[in-house]
Length: 399
Image (cartoon, rainbow, N blue to C red; front, top):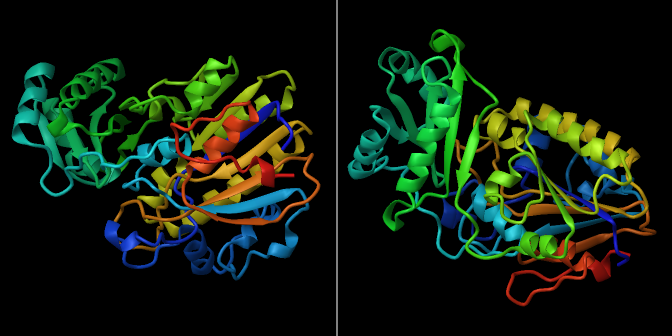
């Protein structure tokens, strides 16, 4: 594989492509397949640009035809090696780390009384909730009481998260962030160690019109050792993080941060970088969270479908600005099939779509045992290999 000056790695958050072989071990008994089940539920997704990049190679989709694939596109399927199906584990594995022990979760009984008592003591605020819930639902249920009392709305999910919601006019956002920093410090204890603390500010006057704002902020654990990102950065290449990438890696291995409001904003920023040939030399790493946050967890099939089709159009815009020495990689970090029961992530395989205008041919590459093949391929492009991290480069196949 030739060396590419710029690599655009886009994580389509939760766009899985079929249940993993061990899906039932993670409570997924209905054979989740985020993309295929949405496709069939609505009678056919319209994703011409993703089709061109090889989407039709997966699972014989009824409405997505592999014959539309362009010559310069390669497709692969990746299995997750980590013992989890969450955001941190998925992204960390992409960049070479295996999570062998799942992060702590508190879905069944909420957080221990001792943790909550310490949070109350250190913030000076009472706590409402403390159970697993949909973020929008718990705000609707407890938001009015929160506005009257000033107590924090604390909740979790099947993921390893502690989320704190607060009305922006009752608790200013900087103050909410400070409370989340306190929660992050408390939950560094081994018995309470969750993957992420998430600030969830919202606005509105009553339950019917409460709405979360875009000033969410994540406080993640740092990766337990250097990832491919750190190794690339050490070689003085740029690592531009768009969306929640910087939060997921807690700033490790990142040289530039661009926050986003939604998928469109993320694509706007990515396309702006692609338009300028001298915008960066290295990796542009993007997370598009709307698929997961707005539609997957809410089990909104039609909304998820629309989100995919909107992304496909934006992808068409990006393709116009890719140059001969650019490489585009599209993948996901887990599944979140909206046709399944519950509101949780689904244990799935993920796509790997590789495209450059310089490629002369393309094909289906097959299945691989870890998401880390992606990170290894990116690192190898910049002359980096590591026996200490998961993954092997697929660069020799991309010609």
